[in-house]
Length: 172
Image (cartoon, rainbow, N blue to C red):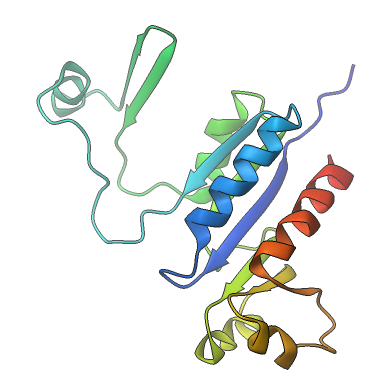
């Protein structure tokens, strides 16, 4: 039996565009269809994401471990330190869990198939700047109307959810 690679799909846009809200909706709907979903989220706020300081896994890493795994009650937490992780390294790590879909939130300049969310006219530059856009989602109807006639599918954000689900299902 051949191994099936997970479908990779990005949700991109500027800060406060609605990436997390859209990602949560997609995760819920994909999981409800019986698909195993893994996610990668770019911590775009600068610095390192928070970890529980002083717990054993943190102490292991501070003592020199490159990775520490804690499991209890079916929950696994991995704490790994490196100078910088590339998105491809993060995808490789998630692939171990054999997901059907890896949903990438952020990393807008990466080349994976993506939906780009536009908040207002000032975000239009993303449509020209980003690679591999498969669908454009607009936060308001007026912006969506401005993009009608584009070579890309354009939807208001709520209507675009079904397009993304269909894309992922047809690719899987």
